[in-house]
Length: 408
Image 1 (cartoon, helix red, strand yellow):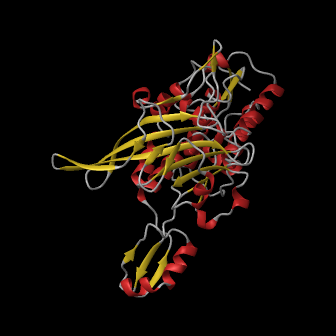
Image 2 (image 1 turned 30 degrees about the vertical axis):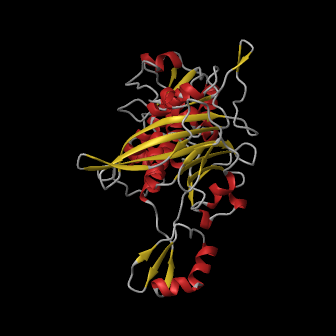
Image 3 (image 1 turned 180 degrees about the vertical axis):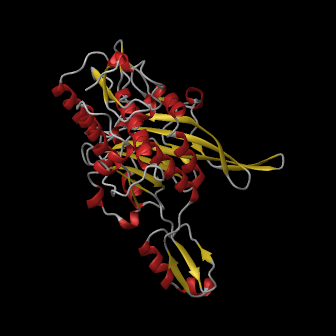
């Protein structure tokens, strides 16, 4: 392999191959078959004395494109190489940060180079790692060998013969809906009705998209499911992200409970609270000048899954804008960093059991989310709402808090 002055001493062939395999088995490449094939091809070609491959060579030999491929009209190779560069950068800034030497693809040439770690930190246009707090917060999901599933709400609506839609907040599953359709009240009040599925809350969609983008950036796979189309047999060994509330998401309903903060049909309540703590968080609407404003609350609960090695993150709210705002909050580095500074132990360890109460402010009739902040939290063990006993100089430190500690 030809080395530039910046690359330093060549690494042994065996060490280079071992590094490549570690990179390809990381979460950034493990499920990206085409990226892995292209990177392996570039490394193999770079170990030869031949000239670096052209776009056409990469497309045909590594991406299985037809021989008629023309890079003048199809930028797929340039897009692919850009993505590989970013994933390599993220690997060496996160799980590969202890690697003694690095693998990179310099800009302007399709060639793999191996660099000393110290050299790589000053090589090219290096950028800071943007996901340190987010990676720590989501680590139980990122480390899950069984993968992750996001289970969102699919609300039930009824449609009459004129095409008008109706919704009853107390009718959220198929069995209850069938009983309602057979009832006399449905016929008298509405006339003939049919069940309509496939509707979505816009707030949950925005939350889902935020989390999907984050997981893609972190190189983690994420399946999207609904309670109506999945079973416990499918989910029992999967780390779960659950959206909705106990009325709309049966999976969330089955796993909630036994926690300090509880979301009911009207508000979030703290079961046991201190003298200076707020006991109730209730959504509210008010007029600010000529503008309607709304404040809603979301409850975030992190707990281990019933199956060892998996985690559950529940994002619950009464109003779908609460779930949307929570999705924004939990995918923003600065927001999550502020929370971690409060709930992590002195050794920087994220608790297995904790809850966050988020306040989300919206404006105008469109309910646009304009602010989100954490206003209360609890770190607790699985048998009580007390803290898991972090000891400092032999004393026990209480792990709970309110708004003053967590504005970020």
